[in-house]
Length: 402
Image (tube, rainbow, N blue to C red; front, side, top):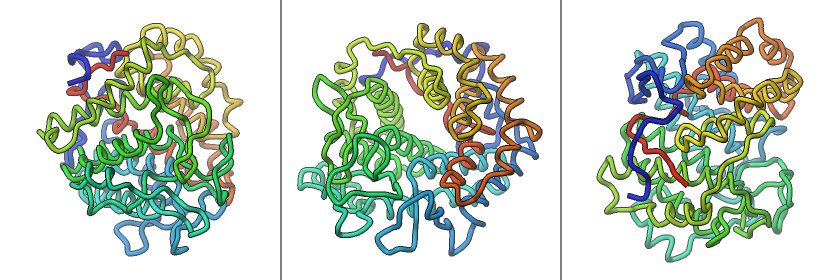
């Protein structure tokens, strides 16, 4: 196995346990940072947030489409999905299943329906004038076990409202495949597979990972941050995207080995290539709230002491209330706080304060316009910030060493 020997991260001190995330297992879900323990108020709020975004479940109309301001249309015109929002939506439903074990199967079923709707929408072109790259014969051969789930196209576009008929932009205005969205989706698929015990979904996550890797990765350089929907790379490499890929691929590989599925597919070659490209890379700290939060997410596996020290030093800037104008970005920081373990005890207290019913973010949320274009993403990010158990490192997952 390409991942390093299993040992406890610095964020997992004091004998804390990670959640199993299995259906019907309420448990502490305390893991690597103190999480709500089946708190009825938290459960009710998560349920309300997810209902606002996706509608009631189970229902023949679930999931309801996102607004026209938030996501572009599907090919049939009946859906609007956004990859980042729905990745966190899946993890929100898994958290709800842990919070509400009596109805866990219903909530996990909602997560499955959301996965299917999102992949049916974003795994295909929105119309004939906006092409996506088709799978090659080699893709089909290497992932023949996943043929039933395949859309016939490579990867998932993110679902931006605006799109170009050829190529994409160098920024984040137009539709395309963005690695920092794809990796969250892959991680959500993995956690769903573990929560539901669905080995086919685990194999599907590995198949998608394998196919997109061959487009995003360049030997010796790492992962492109973005591709156009037809698979053409946008110049600019980010080592942190390569590090995220290494973390997610290592977790998927660990699950494949645990389930005895590596004879069907293995990501060891991809993991080795990522580690070589990273070449001893150490993730720098940041004060950007979203980036800061997700560096804590990765630090659960990388145990990068220098990065952790920088994150602690920059906590005040990342958690500044001036970021409340874009709540989802600040919720990303709060998710990081909740994943910071014993090293971030003060951060966790601050997160609880900001998430409280009387906190600034609650006031901002109550005044938000449903047609703002951020309605769904803000609500699902809040749901996961309230209970980030699906984003915690599991006890059986190895350290990721660059």
